[in-house]
Image (cartoon, rainbow, N blue to C red):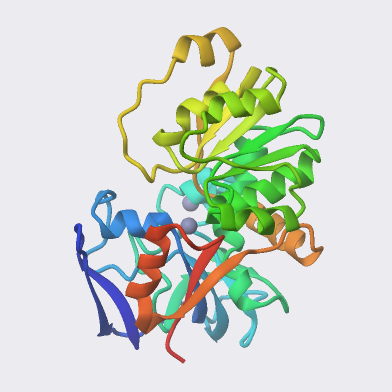
Length: 345
Ligand SMILES: [Zn+2]
Ligand SMILES: [Zn+2]
């Protein structure tokens, strides 16, 4: 089969389309013909060498995977040929204590797809039955977004930050893949979410998704002052920061007493020295890292999409042969939501 592998990470990574052996079927696994794969900042970080630890040699990238089951192991229950599915973000055993406690994304024996083991930038992928979620009839390109970014946002806002219906939430980087789904989810939970973006062309679309309180940040605007003016000096209960260090000061200074700042990604790699006393200590506030999603949260994402509560936002799609163009689009941050790639037919 054709697959896109990472031969050598670096500033100019060596990525190649190769003829790779088809995955072999295990008795408790399935083979999926990949329909679409989302491109995540995680893939970029693996490619540029920022994330090196545990990366498989010649790894097939991609962990946001949807497709159709084309082969089923003899011990597999309740998954049939021809069914549309998505995968979890990591493999898991399903039986260790961590899996049994609903934290399958941290399985003691698990590996990240597109990182520790091969991922979805290929014609086929083989996964264990415990790593499959059936998606019914929903569009398979949209389904590729169910685990990451949608499930990841659900875990962060509900599990990690415990966002409550009577609270408020500020989402930064709200035109990006994580941000645009977090903003919808926060609005669904609270009815009082605020979206912030640096991209004027994305504002209208974010408002169309139901986040009326969308604001444009920009050069020359003190984002912290703007936010405190919007919040009438009170601040929000939860802030969602998928950008990293460049927004951390703004994200923690926008919190109210006992607020929680979610840190979801680091795209800027800057060195920061935020005012921790004023913004965290004297507010009894928390800074919370979050990654991953368990099967239940991916299933919740599916249910929300089916009910029309959350729209998966795909800014652009590319055939796998145009992957370099797709990466350029992501780096330019021009595209709203996720970029997906479609493997060879
Ligand atoms: Zn992802
Ligand atoms: Zn396990």
